[in-house]
Length: 91
Image (cartoon, rainbow, N blue to C red):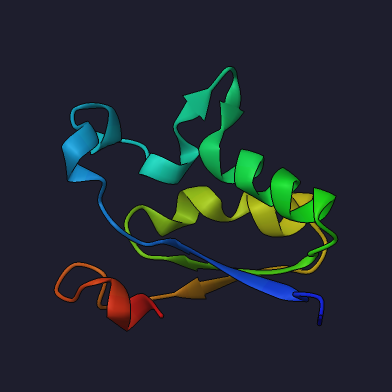
């Protein structure tokens, strides 16, 4: 069986069901036990040997910038259509 080598995390949406929390922070950056949800996912991917990670951002995208500095081989991809299209446009 082949090993998964890369992952895509879709993080472009507004997270409207979590409002008012997501009015100022993207849903993937909401902390659970003091860790942003997306970092928990990244850490789980690393534990599985997956280090090439692409994060598709849109809503409040600038708040994700620190991830590229913190995690080697993590790349942000901007989806300028996040507000008008669904998840398929992120993929």
